[in-house]
Image (cartoon, rainbow, N blue to C red; front, side):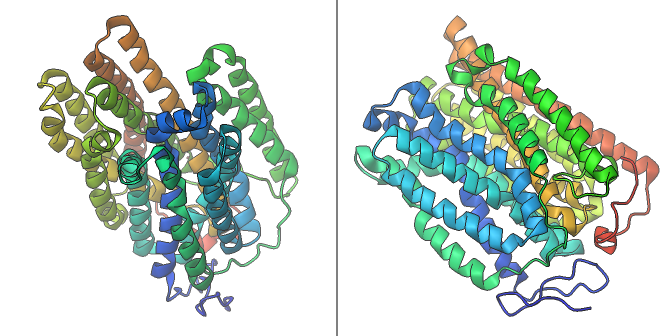
Length: 504
């Protein structure tokens, strides 16, 4: 079998499994995708600490400045599935590089924005570019790696997700501390430019090309239905601070209806042997995909929201600076990063059990942190909570990476982009729900009792409830696997065949 030559002079991994040839530059190529992924995910949270400065400098209203964060999250989520499908049908390398180039350009535009309107417009475009880039990351990992190497690669990917999500506040605080003056917030965006340009240059040299599937037509009605459905679900959440849930609750019903029609349309295309935007057989016939997507969505409800709650508690309750507030939650990021790399090496041996243990560790760590912050003297609380928060981070490192690996392991490479996009769409929806609900709950308790500690404990309790639901789903999947103990083929042995019909 032949394999097309990559831009680096290596060979594209043969996606048919029996003729797979490892690309000699695959590990260097992986680091290019991880750096780009880190920037795109970091930008979800890093801007939050700079919002007061942005509002003051650009003379913006609270509702306007909120769009700097929520607009990015919205367009990010809207692009994921369509971008993943385009990568599968055309060329993941090309779409990745174009999206990365756009991300760099729009980052510079954000930094140079003279008013809030242009800043929000640039952030919307930046989020769209990030959404086109994100599903190519997981798809390229599936394309370039097999077996135990794939688990290690997803371990690094999981570490990137964990660090970028938790490190946003401390990174933003550090940049604001180093960049003097009212214009210092602009460097939060400018810092992406040199890193992104270097990543584009290295990506052109190292990333492998994707063999065209031969079925490159994109399902435009599906794109429209899915986009409108996700938009309807996300809008009330991203506008929650300005009353979006209260006034736009009916969009949840509209979104559910649109996604129901989308599902019907996708099934119709499959029945007619046409190429859908998101193959429904991913959820019904690929072992572990539906459960893994559910675990990821529920986990991110709690995981994404807790960082805003901690920031509110430390900055408003304890009068910490943005940098000091970010440093207070750094132990979680350190624990998550160290464990995620290790978990990538263990997932082939222990499977879903790693996710179960990881979720139990996160729940214990965050629960212990809430208890200590409630009871310990305020001047000692962050120091006392740090070791327990670190242990919670270790648990988190055993959640994201193994769950991605377990969710995508049986997905044929030809469907990797769409599958990764759908998985991340669920995570973005969960993150939007968490970042809307948990701070709202924090403010509700604070307004009633004026008790910052009570508000923190209540909000973290809600986050733990979402994680407990994720744990229950993971335990169900682990016990089911133990009962059935099925003989599993490598997904790449059937990558060009119809999705194997093993019901989840």
